[in-house]
Image 1 (spheres, rainbow, N blue to C red):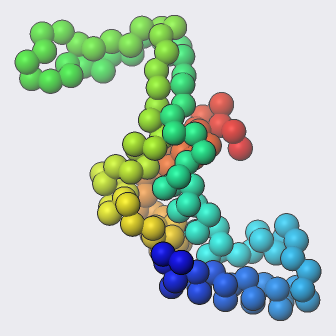
Image 2 (cartoon, rainbow, N blue to C red):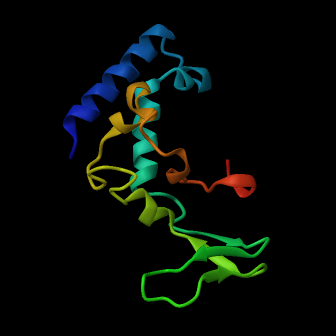
Length: 131
């Protein structure tokens, strides 16, 4: 394994859940496994199932001038398609420090509040979210 410490910690949580539930591993067992959730969340951050999402702009949106030399604002017009690059956002150090490091602790209760919730979108965001 590339992350034996993570693997060992997850294995311990699985063993504890298995013992607690008398060997019956079901949906409810998994729902109570916080480290499992953290690991899966980090896997989905590093390797989102959809690398980008397309959307149609529902109204004109002015993004302002794209740079100091621009003479006019950049406007996305109603009806135009836009792509949201989930993979790129998930790997942006502005949102996820040391983004290439596999770090389930990003999703711990202690660290969740530091995360921009709009930057994590493995299954999309908004009314077209897959889950």
